[in-house]
Length: 335
Image (cartoon, rainbow, N blue to C red; front, side, top):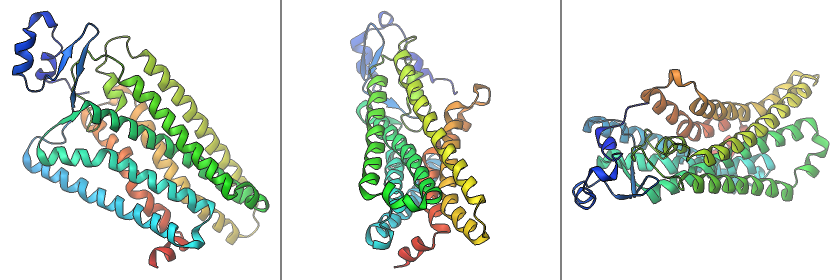
């Protein structure tokens, strides 16, 4: 990871080595007070994409284009599913939820990063940082749960087609979607409360372009983050359970598809599953690499690129993946 700036080091000096009142008044960034357990800041400093004005404006333009593309793609899918009664089926109901989550995810991180580049600042208030952590964790956790439910939906449609209407009725779909959103909310509430109750001893400079829990934990006092580590372990266990459900569902799906005698039937079944499988693979691979990559290959540039991959790319390309080979969705979008 990148080394902390001299400014950050200045804030980690013991309180007795400086004149508290005068020092805090003279340094415009030193907005917080020293406690016995660490420092409590009223703002954090995010990692800047560039130092020169030209590159900052380039970053703003690129992110603006990506953000508008994500808004357009997901907005069109939401509008098409809501307005076309032929798309009022379980598969498209969960796709609508996925598009809503993608819109929320990219809107949580990208606009603030664009604003910082446009106004040449790195600051984010502690309350806005907490809100960003909560919403990002909430939306990301919910999206993973929705993807798991979508895998189950595909399993029932292909492996138990005669019972599909009974198992995936409208009430059952609403309950599964509500459970996914509720689990994401509780997960985000747990992590946000744990993370922002930890005292900070290493300044307030975050080594990422948005407020990310692992980066905040790096600023915490030694042994003070064990509670949050326990929460992370619990989340990993539940995430692994969802991953196993997705894998088992697709093993059953591929086994059933290979038993279909006609090639046309196999092609139709695969067409139903491949877009979802591509979205799951993109989501899981980028998140796993971002948080579980070996420290030996970690670098500021790589961490930044990987963060963009799992926060910006999936919400932008998911609409393209789902609409590319879906004739019903294409027809609804044309209308």
